[in-house]
Length: 253
Image 1: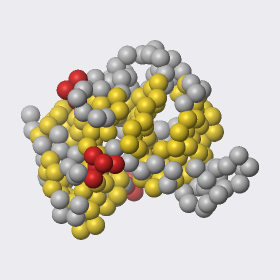
Image 2: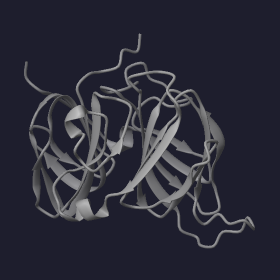
Image 3: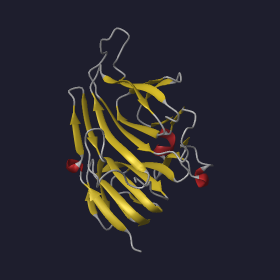
Image 4: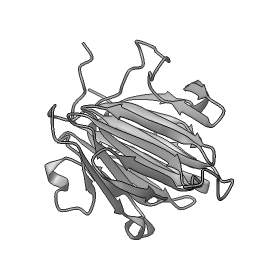
C-alpha cells in the first residue's frame, strides 16, 4: 500500500491560554477532546508550551507513560519525587519514565528561592508522551546533551527504545517500537524521513517542504503512514524538526 500524508496545521491545534502558560496541543489533551484526534502511532501527546518567567507547572502526578521534553528557548527546571532534578536547556534531551507513579514539577528557570524572577524570559519547549511497552515499571529519569551531534548535521537520534539503535548515543525509552530523531537543518538542506509504518514530523521552528505534501511552517505537523523515505527540504531560514519513528500503533479501544 502507498504512503498516506496527513498535514495538520499549527492554527488547527487545540489551544490553552492560562495567563502564565501558552500551550498548543497536537492531540486531544486535558479538556480538549476529539475522538478523531487522540494519537498517531504510539504518540499520544505533543504539546508546544511557552511558560512565563517566575511560573511553571506545580507538582503533579503521572503514571505509565514515557515523557520526552525538548527545549527550544530558555531553561526548564525539573524536580521529581524520585529525587531527580536538573535544568533542561536547548540541546539537552530529557526523558522521564512515569512507571508505577511519579510526581514532578517543571518551572521556568527564572524561579528562585526568594520567589522573585531573576529574568523575564519565557521558556519554550515541546513535551511528547508515548506509552511504554510494559506497564508498572520502576519510575526513571535520564538526560543527555546532544549539541555536538546536532552540530554535525543530518538526523540525530534523541531518544529510542528500538534495539537497532542500541549503539547510538541517545537517551533510552521503554518502548521498543519507537524512536525520536531531531535535526537543525541548514537553509536549503534536504533530508529523508525514515522508512517506517508511522512517521510523525513536527516543525518546531522554521519551515520545510515535505515531498508529496508541500510546505510545512512552524508548528505544522506531517503524519505519514507507511513512510517511504520521503524528502524534506528546509526553507530559507532553516528549520528544527522533530521526527518520531514508530513501527506500530496504540489501540485506543
